[in-house]
Image 1 (cartoon, helix red, strand yellow):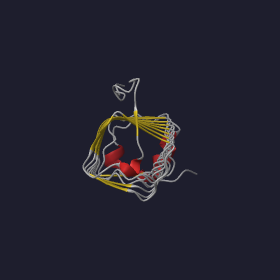
Image 2 (spheres, one colour):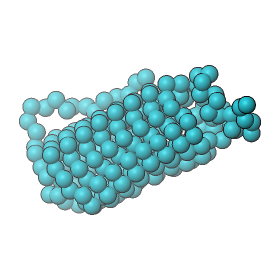
Image 3 (cartoon, rainbow, N blue to C red):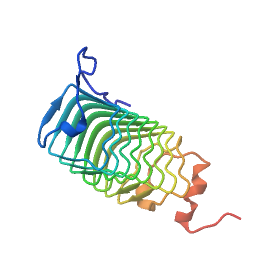
Image 4 (cartoon, one colour):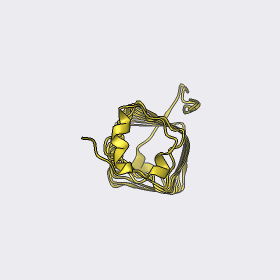
Length: 210
């Protein structure tokens, strides 16, 4: 597993800003956003580079064509936020809430979700590479025609998650919960599971245990 962490976040001097002061299309570097609450916020074509978001609440917002590069999100709440054509490069979500977030057609590269609530998250038609889901809840999440490469599920909760035209070949699911997972035989073929998880996939064969 080789997930790159956000780079250059050990600077001694940070700029402290409020998210509402960010102008459209502005590039923001070396900023610390802390203890801020701004729901329903809209951001367009911004770039955030080498930034920290700590205990920031931005629920039900719209982020369009926004790039996050080398950004750490800690204890943030982005529930039900729409990320439209956004890019995340070397980012980390730690103890955050991204439940109900729309990441359709986003690009995620070297991104870690750790101890995060990502239930109902939609990653359909996204391109995700070198991604870690560790101790993260992905209940009822959506992966439809998602392009994936080097994805790691470490003790993730994939209960009732839905995969459609998204191959999990060589993906290790053995440490995760997959009860009620919705997936085709073609997409689950080649995935790594343990013997107990096999019971959760018997429905694909049209058989029942007696």
